[in-house]
Image (cartoon, rainbow, N blue to C red; front, side):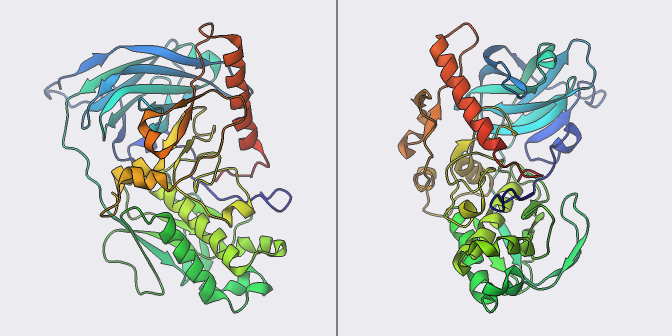
Length: 425
């Protein structure tokens, strides 16, 4: 849905259930009784946790953070939920590192379990639960640490941009769609004759956004699709409410042959805003970069110039965007960050000669609202990025600090709800 003709909406996969979690690299749904009979029991260490954050709801779900001791790269953490009077209710479960950067996020039932293999050493791991307050009061979490296994390796990603049209294309849960080769005239009469130039801007935009990472982008104008496994981003067609759609959010890129679509004809709604051809090209290119981010496992974030921002409008999409460390959209989880440079470095790898800190330095950070407590994040100190101070456990901090946190959370929730689209990006 477009609000006042200026808010852009691109599509996202629905929230995954526990059954879907097994499709994500390093994440698998598990059950206490799903191990093979007669198999040797693995060595496990049961970790003890401590509640470090519990925030009352502000018009949204409650959430709780439980901190456990750290684990090493390659080790698998098995999380089990234990609910009094389990009823199969769903709740959001997220795993964070010691810097509150999300490792994975999914949904589980109140008696479910989840396994996650760490890709890096973590000094501490935090389990986040979000859902109805009465449900969280009945939930306890146990975590088992299983011995190390072969570490996951990075794998470069090939991406093919399809401008040549498609027949009966199905992306995610959308209906089949057919469309002809990309023609800029479909964007509005002012863009007739600009097809070649706008395609050039789209390609340059996508390549610029992923320039630090091992992502090789080619197009249908260059030739047929790559022979190796590759992601495809289609450019064409129209949708009533969406500007783009990704097949799913593939954390750690376990499916390198997935696809997304940018509904180019939907952008014709913005022709009356007077976007120049280069701005229209960047709008479509940034939308493609956003959907590619989902295919590579990135979640929605809020604020600044982030490619994965879920609250911006047309002018933001037509401008310069970047991949950085940004606050999670509260619809993903009410607190925490997604560190896109680190996730991509661990998934597809960095290009030769590029350091992770250098990739971060090419990002910017939008200031937090006035009055919010700040503390320097040691993980990102060289990049000059800051993390918001975590809210206090009720009764454990001064009222003014708690009020500042409530103001900050209210700010981000309001930003998320601003001109809400029919479907989140």
